[in-house]
Image 1 (spheres, rainbow over the protein chains, first blue to last red):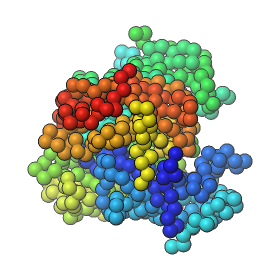
Image 2 (spheres, rainbow over the protein chains, first blue to last red):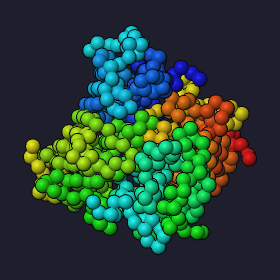
Image 3 (tube, rainbow over the protein chains, first blue to last red):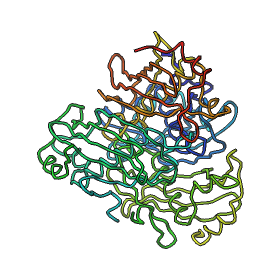
Length: 147
Length: 147
Length: 147
Length: 147
C-alpha cells in the first residue's frame, strides 16, 4: 500500500487527498456541508496516525481515552463537486492540558474551499476531559506548528 | 411529544414516517441508495421500541447484546426526492435462535419505492451470535406476522 | 400525519424533535460530531417549511435557487447517546440581501448539548449569491426574532 | 498523487483500499452496515474511472446519464473496526442493454467481511432506464469478467 493512502507532511502541514463520491454530495449538485467535517476528521486521524497515535490504542489503554471535537469555526467559501480530488491540510497549533488546537483547510488545486479552527478535547469514556498523556505529547510535539 | 414520532402499528405492520432532507440525497437529484438502509434501520428500531425493546437496555444488561444485519436482499424500484414524506413499513416475520427475519418496504403515498428482506442477528460485543433472550422473545411474539 | 413530524413554533422558536439512531453514533459510544449539523439542517428545513418555503419549489422557479451554509460557529458542550430524543431549536435572527442568520441549539431535556450560529446564503445553481426573493422574505418576516 | 488513490486492477479485479474512520462506525463498536454500501459505491466509481468513464462527463453529455443501483444481495459476514484498512474488490460481470452486473467483496487482509451482487441501471435524469452508450461499452468491455 502506498504511503499516500494516509497523506504526508510537507513543511509542517499534513496533506490528505480526498476524492468526492456520490455519498458526499446532495441534490443541489455540490458537496453537502457536513461532509467537509468528515473530511477534516479523516485529516486529523491520519495526522495522528503518522505521528504514531492511533484511536484503537488510545481506547485500549489502562485509562481508555478518545478525542472529541469541542468547538469549530468553519468558513465554507466555495463548493466541491462530484469526482473532485481535494487536499485536506491540517496543522496542529498547540497541544496542552486536555486540549489540541488545529487549523484545517480544504483545497481544490490552488483554490481554498473550506477553512476551520478546531478545538479537540481528550476525554475518558464518561466524556470527562483528561490530560493528554505524556507519551502522546512527546509523539505530537515535533509536528506542532505555532500560529 | 406525539406518538407519531416513533410510528405506529396497523394490522401487524409498523409504519414510520420519514422525511427526506438534504443529507439523504445525492448530486443525481434523488435519494442516495444507502440512505434507504438508514431509514429501514430506523423502522426496525422504532418497531423494537414500541414492542418494549431498546438498544441501551440491551447493551447494559448482564450480557451486553446488540443487533447486527447479517443479510439483505434489496430492490430499489423507484427513487424518492427532497421534501418527500415516506412511510417505512416493517414486519417481523420470525424471531428464533439468534435471528430475526424482517420484511420492509418504503412507500411514497401508494407507490412502492424500495422493498427488502432482512436477516438480523443478536450478537455479544465480540460479535458472536447469541440466543435472543426469553424476555425479549416474549415482548416480540405478539407482533410477529408469519409470512 | 401529526404536525409534530415537522416540529412547531413556540415563542418564536422552532422546535424539532430528533431521535438518535445507530446511524448517528460512532464507536466512541456517543453521537458523531458531524451528525449534529445534519440535525440542525433538518431544523432549518422544517422551519422554512412551516413558514411556507420548500426546497423543491425554490429549485423549480424561473431562477432556480438553493440555500448553502456559509459559516458556522459551533460549540459541542455535551454528547447525545443512542435512543436519546433531542430537541433542535431554531431562531432566524435576520434575513436580508442574500443572507439568513440563524441561532440554533440542541437540547436533551433541559440540558444544552450543542449551540451554533449559522450564516446561510441564497445561491443560484452556479453557486453565486442571489437576493432572497421578495415573496420568500414576506413569508419569513413574521417568524424573525431579533437578537 | 499516487495511482493507489483510485485503486488498481489485478487479474481482472479492481482493488480499492478503504480506511475506516469515526464516521463509518456506530456505538456498537464496529462499522455501521450501510457504510459498506458507500465503500462498494466508491469501488464501482474508481473501477469506472480507471476504465475511462467518469460521472461528470456522463452527466454533461447530450443525453445526461447517471447510474442507479437497482438491486443488491448483500452478506455481512464479519465486522470491520476503527483504523482497519480494507480492500474493496470489484468485478463487472456483464454490461448490456441498460444494465451492469457487478460482484463485490470487502476484505480485511485475507478475511472476507462482506460480499454482494449488484445490479446497476443506466438512467436518464427522469430516472428512465437508457441503453449504455456504445463508447461506454467499448471502454468497459476489456475489463469485464464473465462469471
